[in-house]
Image (cartoon, rainbow, N blue to C red; front, side):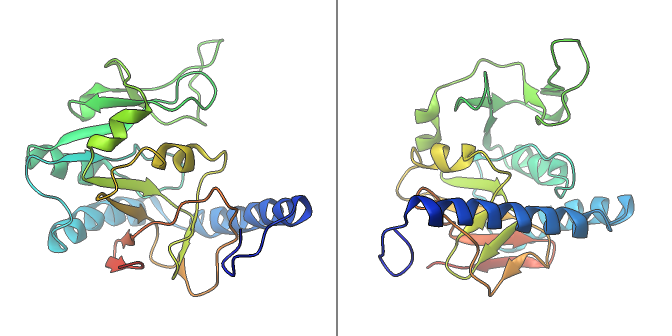
Length: 215
């Protein structure tokens, strides 16, 4: 269904997927203009803004993600979670796009994922060595932090592609807040291309601050 409650046919769904790809390509092109210093500072500010907005409660369970590529570095925010004695869950993709979560004990516990030939898989985020729990583990999180290329005023989010987070979010606790991390120019007034399975987020967190999109 679309925002007006109309059924989306196969051709419309294909058009939305093609439009998503166009948006991702444009987002990546814009992100490539950022310098290493800008990315480092963005990561620091992300943690500051999360504290200012009181998004995280001490000793709570938070499902976060490990950044990669052009995403804002998550290390400062993850370290903030550890400093607040939070239990931190991060994705374990497993084979293909299987849903799973592992508890992260610290930044030092992250490991590169490797291809069959031993080379580093640059298309997969780092993961901890800890055993993976099933998708139902997400229900224990009070806050869920996900990556995004764009987020609109309705909470529709453009993700990495593949639908991993949308499948994972079906297991979230009904009272959990879902927050999308993105660059300051990526929240948009233009409706993000979306499909029936896409799950809206509740707010955006950028280096400029936290903004509620659905309340």
